[in-house]
Image (cartoon, rainbow, N blue to C red):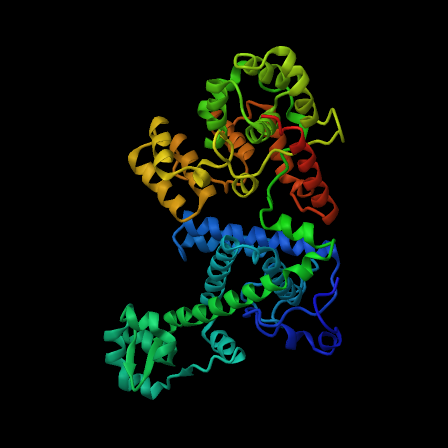
Length: 508
């Protein structure tokens, strides 16, 4: 595919001209042709990086040793640029520094297309890109920071050594964390005060003759404001161009999928079938089910019925943890007949949909359990529904009561509600996992209800795999082929499958 315009401009440029610096404002869109496979791979891997940035931003203190170590490892493992200069790093494993910068550039623009569609998506994308930009900018040497400013026409003058010496006492008195040694060793920038209003308002800089004197460690605030403004405008412009993009039948399903893509391991593999009994489900729901599934199980037991959204979400989850088709039919039938549905009506109105879910009817497709992103972003619950994400869709007071009923401590509830307030719903669920399992750190980034169950069982068994599904999912995680990298055809097929499955659950 071609991003835009003519390619000759790109061809006529050398690698050094294109990606001279390892960091950029993404002002110029890519102009080259790339394959759909590369398009998808770049998009999914950047999405993985941004989700890591989000998780670390809440679970670790920013710029702490743990934060730096984990983020560096993720950037390097996904082959994104960190801080090397273009000519400094030789090709390693077939990936040159130029290719990393090319990937960084193209993948950013792909996700712009996917995340410009709603205000919530734009807000999330801007925040994660800003955090990633801040980290990479702070990691640059002083010379590279200055080069970046000049390359992007940010005309911030570096204060001379003589002027720094004359103003040293005033700079130290007005700037937090600045000492005489730091003033001498590091750059100080002279910036028009109107470009540094955040720093002026918080009294972090020295003002003289209409200029703010910005210490080296604070210049990132100015640069970030510029980056945010540019990116926000660019997303608004991209959103206006979406109708033209969506007219391309190759891209429309892929971009729609990316905005709520799941990039973890695949829980549709049926190797785990038959490893739990129906008698275990009540006990497992209390100790190893995520809150969304615990809520659905409780509603089913109390009402002896779930509407189609709840049956889909809970039924696929149960399939993923090991229920066989026969067990599933017995489970749903035994519960529904306790309510207003007799056995004959169940067999006529509901049994087909259960068999369809297991790939025994219709297209005979192996349907995939819902990921956290699908639960959060798709099909919000209405009156009488119990599906969805409790952290996303419940009123905060009702969520608080629910957590109190499940014996979560008051301080723990406050931590969860703070995460919910910040719209970190998966991290709130991860905190719920830590609080209910009495661990300081879950040791994983939660992306899937079935992942929650697997990690819970692993922890409760002392690290021993008491159920086969833990072992098989681990092997799936170790196998790169099992990581979800949806091709355009596959992602389109997945949406058709779920739409087809929806049609069998429309009865109430």
